[in-house]
Image (spheres, rainbow, N blue to C red):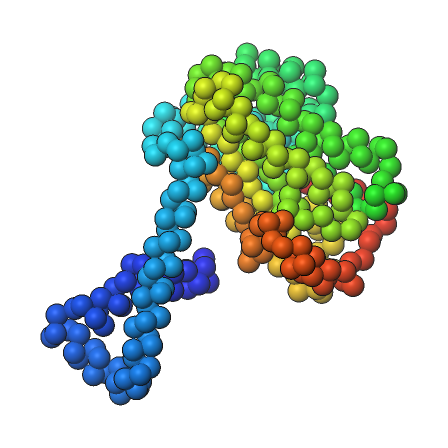
Amino acid sequence: MATSLVKNLPFSPSVTGALLYALTRAPDQYRKPLLQRLSQYLSPKNIARAIATLKWLVALGLARNAHVFLSDIAQNNFRLRSERHRYVWETEIAVVTGAASGFGALMSKGLAEKSIKVIAVDIRDELPLDLQAINNIHYYKCDITNRQSVMDLAEWIHQEHGEVSILINNAGVCYEHSILDASEKALNNLYGVNIISHYYTLQAFLPNMIKNKKGHVVATASMASFLSPPGLIPYCNTKAAVLSLHDGLLAEMRVMYKCPEVKFSIVHPTFADTPMVQPFKNELNAAKAFVLDPQVVSDAVVKQILSGKGRQIIVGGGTGWLAGIRAWPHWISQAILRSGDNKIKLADVGTERTGG
């Protein structure tokens, strides 16, 4: 948190603008003593350079703020007002898939702490004890790759608890294998859990959100939505599909259903310390790869839901710039991607890692 604050200070117009004002426009009784003090350490030429740098930083900061503001309203159908005022969190119901571990468990806890009733969904027989101890988390075992099972889940929730206003499609699995070695079973499971299940949950819960003109759908994607490293191609394919589905949902809600009130968010974390990554944590540490605290991802998602706005969230630990690498000239993007070729080590083919 502190590191992020320090990194952002140079691009904060409130900071750079105040310094620029103090050096150039402030009343003489404040400006002259400040310049005299600076002149003890800097030459007049360097002071002039510092002022010129501050002008550029103010301009860049204002441009960045404008970019963030315009991106925010664009992702919400150019609506300035959020939908937060329509939610009474104590009465809202959230469905979280892949809720027994990783991001899903943390998101379930985070929402429950805000008094939201959580329907935790997973394929395991039961939730971990810490989740079982939370009164407003209710567990439902469900194979989300089976459409009828998902529809049965929706019917049970409707009868026992009410209408769902928050859906988090978080469940995910990962296999590490080459394209030629990918088995039929692995591919079916990958696509079934990571993308096809999203269609089933959307078909089960989105119609009521459209009817009520109220709801928020969150999808857990990955930085793998933007990159396809050898050994993870099928997994990356599914995460790129999740991003494409997110974009399509925004368009269909606007064009076909005239329902801009329903919000959609997607989160792209890099490697995080979840059960999916745990078997390879030592290798990542040896390579000095940045491994996220999964709580950071969960907190970002919960915060976004509470904001009443939709957004694409990139939690990359300094790798967020990779999200735009496909738009770069090929000679630049390919040079960057090829630089990591010698570091790639494939694990045993078909090694399944589950979590989210």
